[in-house]
Image 1 (cartoon, helix red, strand yellow):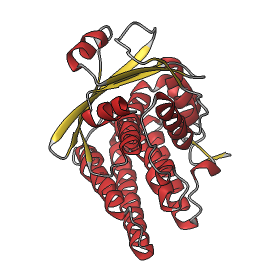
Image 2: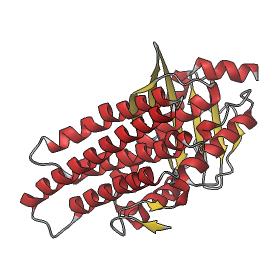
Image 3: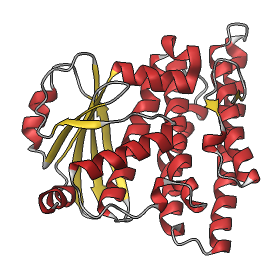
Image 4: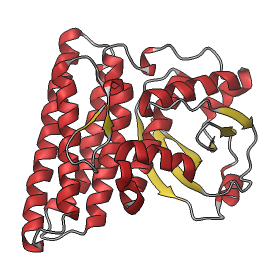
Length: 313
């Protein structure tokens, strides 16, 4: 296991994230390396503020160029081998360009920016990329949970298996997650980070309410950012926000066996003390509380697809 880029800014890279295609593996590492350099420029005390923005702009341009070239080469490879998941995979790349790159343009088109904007951009970019490499990219070479068939029914044991597989694939974490409450109503669980995500699938919208104990977040943040995460909460939260939104999309596809497009319409953190009210208003089809080796987490959704499959299981 080794670090790429700055000693304190880069995620811990290991063989778990390797596709086995050397060119693509090197490009992935390079993207994370450039992201680390951007963080270093943003926080470096020895850089004159008049010089910081041009340096940031140059590094951001390099990051976007690196991703664009990588995406184009990956798409060409998928077409060459006749990969059946090409359409969905390209759609994921296009979604990244239209959402994450909008943040990039807001930063580079201005003469000034604050460090929090850089943390948010890099954090969300890494959150997206981490989930994407571990699921969609690994599926190209048959190493992802996405290359497995969807479970036949949505019994709780099947949901537990899929969540544990996905956590292991994306974060290299053995969580041993298990449902402890199949009808969670928002009872207090201590220090939680809760999130509301609105998705659009074709013409229908669905809502996911989810939350995770801060102990779990600290475990994940330490894996990604080492000692840096403690004094960069904006960086950590933006990573968690985007990673979580993508995580539940991937899980939904696994549980339903559907590969249609799912867009994130809204994503925000919930204020402390509002979860129970949000859950009452949602009237979820499922609301599950899990315990794990790293802390508790929950997910609730009004998705009729998942709700119906749970009823039939």
